[in-house]
Image (cartoon, rainbow, N blue to C red; front, side, top):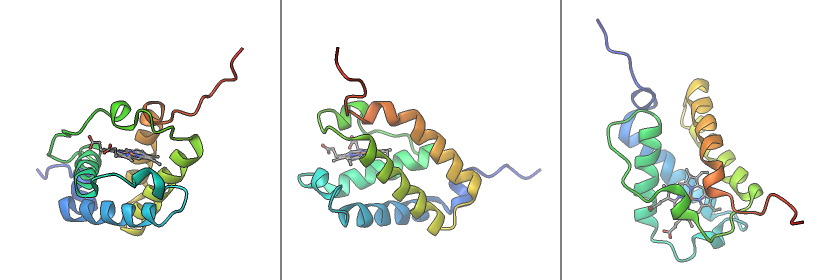
Length: 127
Ligand code: HEM
């Protein structure tokens, strides 16, 4: 009996995920609103952690070893708008890489789950 392929395998494994992440940061760093966030960041390390995180979201083998997402983004003041922009870019890059719609929807669902850990814009008016 054939084993059921994971999304990670369907998308093309480590090399495809690496290409998606490379492309993701090319587009992010080309965006005048998003670029400033990454000014002092060690990009190779960030890309490595993002690739492992995306792999594990897709059912890949390597466990994520970066910081918890809330901790990694704390104090940056990431707005809802910028979060949505990064999410949209990731989805576009995944689609361009040939990911099926069920894979894209799985990633969109996961983005919805981690949103609260990353966005810091005050969501309520005080008082
Ligand atoms: C959309 C969902 C997002 C995911 C899944 C995500 C994922 C990650 C991961 C895995 C890291 C590495 C953590 C580590 O190295 O320990 C990271 C770091 C970082 N992220 Fe995000 N991120 C997201 C959204 C954003 C947004 C919207 C921004 C800003 C516009 C952003 C800016 C950064 C920066 C600047 C770092 C580097 C932090 C540092 O090294 O000090 N991220 N992110």
